[in-house]
Image (cartoon, rainbow over all chains, first blue to last red; front, side, top):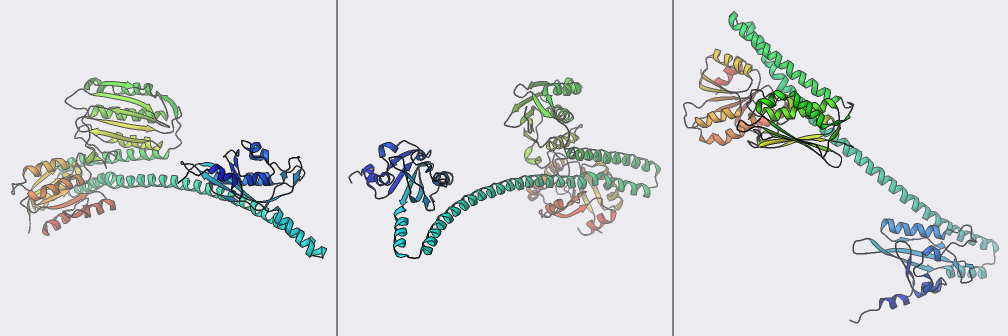
Amino acid sequence: MPKIDYQAVFNKVPGLYLILLTDLTIVEVSEAYAKATMTKRSEIIGKNLFEIFPDNPEDSTADGVANLRGSLNFVLRNKTAHTMAVQKYDIRKPNGKFEIRYWSPLNKPVFDSNNDIAYIIHRVEDVTDFIRLEDERIQNQLLSSELQVRLKEMEIEIIKRSREIQQMNAQLEQKVTERTNHLKEANETIKKNIAILTTQKKQLEDFCNIISHNLRAPLVNISMLVEMIAEDSDEEEKRGLVEKLNIASQNLNEVFNELVESIQISQDTEIPSKKLALETYLQKTISGLQGQINKTKATIEVHFDLAPHVHYPPKYLYSILHNLVSNSLKYHSPNREPIIKITSKKTANSIILAVSDNGLGIDLKKNKDNLFKIRKVFHSHPDAKGFGLFITKSQVEAMNGKIWLESTPDVGTTFFVEFKNQKI
Amino acid sequence: MNSVKNLLLIDDDEIFTFMTKKIIERTNLAEQIKIFENGKDAITFLESVAHKTALLPEIIFLDISMPILDGWGFLEEYIQLKPKFGKKITLYIISSSVSPRDHERAKTYSDVSDFIIKPMSKEKFIDIIKNL
């Protein structure tokens, strides 16, 4: 097959074609187009479309430039072809005077390999003669001047109507865009609300769980003890039961207080945050735990240089640090002296605090459901009470953060706390 | 009247196990009551007596909420261990939980005969032993 000379083919193509770049620079023109618009190829290539084809300054109603620009913008925005209504667009003659012309234009995009618009094909048909011929024919045939007037009116009407349609199209397009944006926003809101509801459902489930497991258990004990005390006649035995009753009611009290505290935390969403230096709060924690640190011969390593500050309620930060460090001290391995590393780092909008130790570790497979529940412990340790993690989790989640951990039994545990919305 | 030789009570709540042991003792329907305060200790015991039929319990009362290995964790290991036992063991969950979720979950284990909501009265215990 011989190679086709597309340049020559395009020049001679029987139709009025202009090729535009996306910035509306003219890059190619068919001979027929140049002839119809009384321009020269060499004078218009490389020029902007509207520089070559301005509105007729003598026609105060001229809207050719505006409508053509609108159509081209539509093509660029929607990556699809656009056919314009019949458009009056006068052409500048070489002598500078304008000649009345009517056109039927079509603008169509050409895509590159990335599916971006490379060119726009602008094709027109000159319908001036048609409109003029029609005019003459009617002038010859119609004797009644009234009918002539009406025809003129009708012609104007047609142009007016087609303009209106074009305007309505533009408005419609704008409305569709607005609606789409509204829908997008509404969707986002729904997504956010679902996330909130999911969290609240989870909290409610946790709450029911606490009521049924942790509050009901001591209550059952108390009622059993009371019943038995009533039945028993032996004074000695009664005294023992009363002692147990005391323990059970203390237990109920503790669980109850803890539950109340966690509810207060989750309700108190307005608690003020301050810019806090992690170092300062860790030093407080360390001095509070000095006794245990000395006893266990623990080494504490601190690296806060990547993110030295957080924006947080002071009380929560202290409580979180205290609970995590005291957990690491409490569950240290009897086979090695504890090394506790506390670090902070920045991510896009958050700060992540990590507290890692070389302690007993937790079997995450067996305990994954129970990790942060009230009064849950994973070790048969005399100090184990499971208080800290439940409250810590409440405090972290009340500020929209996250807490999670990685752990290997007998190697160690790392707790991570994400502080959200940190613009420090 | 039926009675049992060995009974296992697996629960970390000392007051509850103390009281329940007392209640059971007063019925004179159980010779030996063994108490374990978490699932892991109970599994360790069952493993050690798996082939000693005389020492295996006839009945187990299992709590759900316990440290180290909870009731669900115990059940998973118990199912693995069960084929080794040369004896029929009846297992009841005994829990303070009134949460439907726990009750539904218990139903998924064919080895769980019933879910007893704490406390367990003397009459309830006698009833259970009668129907063994």
